[in-house]
Amino acid sequence: MASFVSLDSLSGTTSADAMREALSTSGCKSSACGSSAGPGDMPAELWNRIKDHPCYSEEAHHYFARMHVAVAPACNIQCNYCNRKYDCANESRPGVVSEKLTPDQAFRKVVTVANEVPQLSVLGIAGPGDALYDWRKTKATFELVSREIPDIKLCISTNGLALPDHVDELVDMNIDHVTITINMIDPLIGTKIYPWIFYDHKRYTGLVASQILHERQMLGLEMLAERGILVKVNSVLIPGINDQHLIEVNAAVKARGAFLHNIMPLISDPAHGTHFGLTGQRGPKHAELMAVQEACSGGANLMRHCRQCRADAVGLLGEDRGQEFTLDQIPAEVAYDPSIRSTYREVVARERQDHVAAKQEATEVLDLTDSDARILVAVATKGGGRVNQHFGHAKEFQVYEASAEGVRFIGHRKVEDAYCQGGFGEDATLDSVMKTLEGIDTVLCAKIGDCPQEQLKAAGIAASDAFAFEYIETAISALYASRYGRALQARVA
Image 1 (tube, helix red, strand yellow):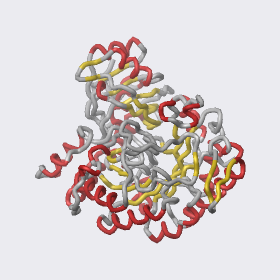
Image 2 (image 1 turned 180 degrees about the vertical axis):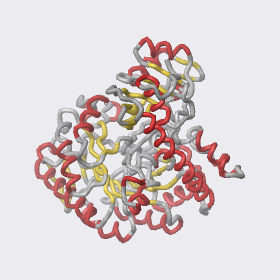
Image 3 (image 1 turned 180 degrees about the horizontal axis):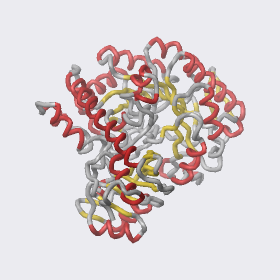
Image 4 (image 1 turned 120 degrees about the horizontal axis):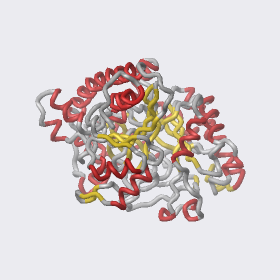
């Protein structure tokens, strides 16, 4: 809860300035999915559609939350990387939920969350099966929620097999954000990913299954683009199977009108019970994922902040409050109060203006440098676009590339075990953090102790809390200029 703007901190304030102060020291843990473009980079109509969507706008994820409701358990394909689990609170990956919901239960949950999480802007249905194959439940849920909370954005994630059959209904229901998981455009590669599909009342396997799936995915994408629905394509990077092929996928989905392409690392822990996990298929290393993303530059816009959310995730990207909103904690009768979300949006609008000004200032600072150096900077953040988290509390780091050309977000790295456990640093967990920071030049955080700072230095990683609570771009540009320019006096060693 500490990483969210608390309800009390918002409802108890009497001024927008007090609320902004709460926002500047709270928020999400990470930079997540979406376009890095801002309002000056696209038509106003398009910006208005994505500016509050944390998955479609990199900027929005600093301020706005999403929630998924697990109303669609049935699925029409089998993926070698998927194992849908129920009654599971300890795994954070797609297909996992703590409880399945009926549309009525989902409606009560959404209203409860909306009343307690002012950042909520998006309701998504991502399974745990396929939202379009289980369409009756998906549609009923959206109809109930949209009547009560008409300003909430409705999103669907799908494998695309049933998509062409429902495009007209998606348009009629004003669902204008759809995510399709597309891992291949070559059916031969698809045979290594999908054991079977269920289509038109029949199960298909092998090459025929992959051919049908591919054709339906491409058709669905084209139909959505023709109707002006924004499409994000998710692709799972599977080393040795589709890693190089994803460059072709990127070009193909761009040609068919995809708004974003999200290339995600395979999750293949054997404990998850997936086919890939049990047969030893490894996931990609950070450098491998980054290399494929860089190879796709110039194709479809890349989303680099995805957290591969659970199918019942609640909250800001990089954080999950789902266990606070299980059915036994939700009232039998609910009534929506729009005031807290409305007030929060007013505050965010002003905070965004400040952030834009800070980014411009950072650009001007970097313009005074003339180095060819490029460095990777890891930032410990709780959100709001600021350096505002203690090193020892970080469960992930946002990674930025800094150069004379600018400050560019390139991804995030999860930490298996935060360094501070029960208020004390542990050497074993510091080793885990240092492994996560491989290749990083500098770590910026709100606070760091002498011991971990010295150990990081011995490993060739600088760490500083000199920029605590500053905007990330401001901090990184100042760091870069202190090393490679004469614009600012150095504040770090």
